[in-house]
Length: 418
Image 1 (cartoon, rainbow, N blue to C red):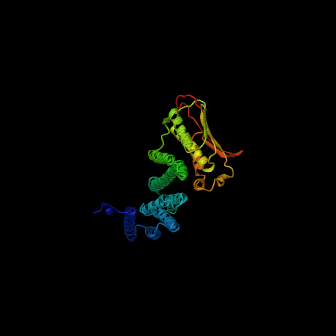
Image 2 (cartoon, rainbow, N blue to C red; image 1 turned 120 degrees about the vertical axis):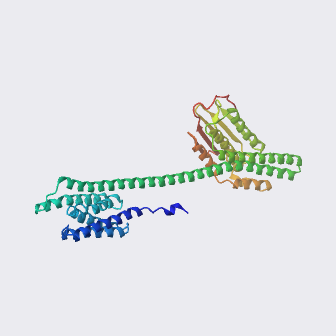
């Protein structure tokens, strides 16, 4: 059996206590009234308080205005009859004040007003009765009744503050959950963007190179130079394998997360850049590669961004300016590194490529450009300290300039090379 089903719902116990209190007070009041211990007007006013108490128990909690009226009737009628009933009717004052002060549906001013009204009537009624010839009250008796009103007020205020804290805690939990959800969505979006950026860089380079290689193979087969065509096919297979391995590394890096604390040695960075330059030359492109300044180790994100910038720039040159020479210059400074890649614009654009099988392939390759590579380059460098990318046509040449800051102490400086 599920024990949670045996537990009373919240609010059941207070309801039972109110019902029991109402029954007990009603029974004592009837006995005193029938026995002549209280005056008729006292009994009539006390009944009004008890009826308001009973009505409050059956009115839904959403009827706040009606509840306020019933509680005020309870506080006034019970406060007037508290002294004449020897303190019996102070009991309905307590739940009336509690309800008015503890519930967030009611303004705190209503609770304080009910408590002050009840306190004034509790003390004022015996004084008025004494002025009309009744037995004068003792200070201790009035203070004891006022203490009951004060305790009810303090209990209601304490309960109200507790509810306010619970509401604030619940809102904080909701906001925290919403923030975590937003952070998770942002992390997912960032991961997708990184994967899309890496896949674009890898595929644009490797598949673009494959198109050029297969283009050359087709031309050599048409010319009957099968030996050269076979060599080109071997190069194409090697490029495909290299591209697949690079894509796998990109996915593994994304899974494990970037290690911004690790660094890449200057000699490895130079080897990566030279490898891209050699690949461009093997694809028939002319290139001039220079480095200026003292080479140094770089944080892994900066090294990857530098390689991707050269890779994307060379891929774009092969797409949009086939046959045009490319100038690459890497500037090493103590606090930053900058790479500049420029090439002449193809005269008339890709439309000037001859309409042959080879020319059709190059036209198809140029048509695949969408600007995503440069956008990804800007995103990659924009995430680095001091990172920026500038690109565009100027004076008949297309220029790409990407730079990023080098954190203090990334490694020992190497030599400078050209």
